[in-house]
Amino acid sequence: MNKILRIVLTIVGMLSLILAVGFCLRLPWTVRLWPWADSFLPYPFLGSITAATTASLLWIGLSGELRSAAGGALHLTVFYAGLASSLFLLSQHGGDQNLLMGATVCAAGALVSLAMFLWFRRYPLRESRPMPLLVRISFRVFVVVLVLVGAECVCLEASANVISAPGLVLPGRRLLLPLWPGAPKLAEGVWSVVGIPGI
Image 1 (tube, rainbow, N blue to C red):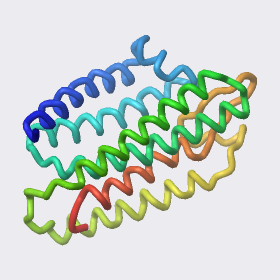
Image 2: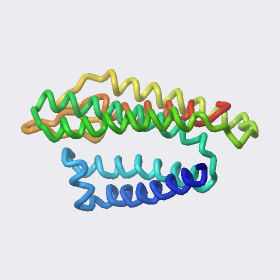
Image 3: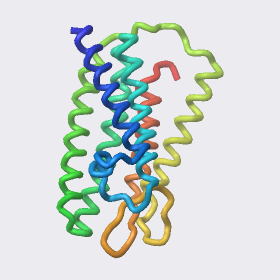
């Protein structure tokens, strides 16, 4: 079973790498996956998130440290939930059915990711060496910064005049929903706490 999971994770990691390259190069098929961009900025942003996921998937698949997938799965749960909320609110504001479909897909992704978290957290960690003190302190600072910045983004009021992260477009106006830029940062903070023991 473990061998099958490692193979699946490695294959998904390779597919994720193709997706990351597609987003960064703005290939036509990736543009169709995210048609709401108001500039080129969301594509390298999404590409960087996908590339980070790729690195985690390939490392877990090749190393066999399956317990580490729990942190990544929880990361995706928070990310997809925030994105689903943003797209749903946008669909209610602008009446775009594509946004509602995107919100539904992201909500399904959040549920699948949550199920993966519950599955992979059953595995024991094979690596038991203590984390060096300097690295542990660095990660703690990293988590605090991520959570503070993510929480600030989530609490910001949506504004047509302030665009602080890759936005979404609505007919006639630009609108940034705070859950969209905040969700990745909060998700990374959650991943750092859950996925890296001993911090």
